[in-house]
Length: 308
Image (cartoon, rainbow, N blue to C red):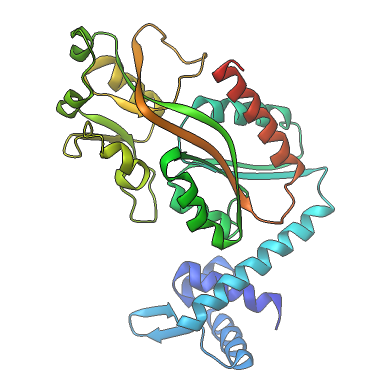
């Protein structure tokens, strides 16, 4: 078996056709087909179903592809050793769009901006998709916010995928709304009445069947979130402007001191609601020095957030 065969199989699976794979690899379709046929003959099983409608992976092909991708990713790591001083790479997935993460990432990028070759990636997603990315080595580090009530059962469920979970901090979960919100004019804050107003949530563009119940099912049980009154966005600025200029509200952790404007919104702590900030990564695999550097920057931002 040759690496070229693995490369062709991965490309065919990703592109969905032999012809498209040939274009992307700058070779001919007959060459792609012959290479895949030779690989399947050597393996003793089919990787792809071939029909008039196109190609799909066989059951064994799905397993093969998973291992093939891992081989290629490990090969990339081997090749990166000699270039560690001139090439730096990190990939971080986060379940919440918070300034602590972005501040740490910006500072990290600035510190390495003169490196000849860099590949830095920070993205938002659901916990399900980020864990899947780490398991399949598409991402090096996940930063998750998990409700304390379900934390232990969550880790027990996900820990069987050879992943390591490290709880970093516990943060209070709050309702964020504008200073002039009608509910703030009452003598005492009535959480139940929040169901009359829209909740602003993030769209993670996820691959899984993600819903708000996936991340906040225990918050839903408190009865103040109306799933029929929701606004879905994918930018922090849009979220903040919606809260500042309407009666919509968000549910999130503490605001960072750098967040502005400070005098337009306020927070109401949700009783008995805390989120644990959790790092997740592959178990028994050393962190790169770049990931370690980012983690230190992120912990510093958390200290700035909490004041201790």
